[in-house]
Image 1 (cartoon, rainbow, N blue to C red):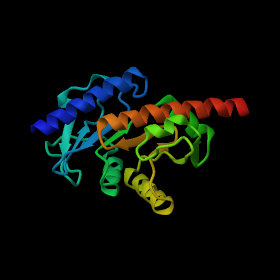
Image 2 (image 1 turned 45 degrees about the vertical axis):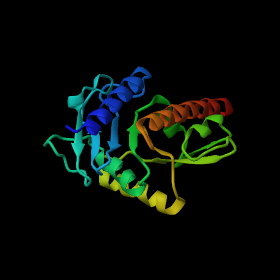
Image 3 (image 1 turned 120 degrees about the horizontal axis):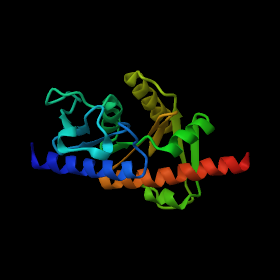
Length: 203
């Protein structure tokens, strides 16, 4: 085990504790990953409890997503890899199953619009609340390659994104470090919660 892999694995372990304590990765839900300097990846092992991760619950994949230790990575590894291959600047991807993300996926159609939220500035590359961010909502799909292609098509048609939601499931977001990805999770979950409450007020 390299020092870098051990350090990044520890960051994912700490992220799991934080997100579990918030109620955003219940049971064995969610998955996390980090891109290493040599192009390989550290990712959580399939079926692990994210609030009780240990170094043994984080495995390494080569640059094409092939396991380097024979174990089975997260079932949604393909979604992580699609993001890393699409956006070279991404260093970490976090996927919580948060209540507010599930709620807004049921309240809104194919996308959620976030605008005039101060916390938009917590996301990489956004420096004003006067920003209109579209968060696409994709139907849940157990066929991960097909879902990854759907995400890719959306990016082709609309440009970059900061996050996306899988309906009734959870959301994906990312950053240039585990810390920045955690900040994005917290900011997005707050805005999702606000939009869910606002929808209730309006209806």
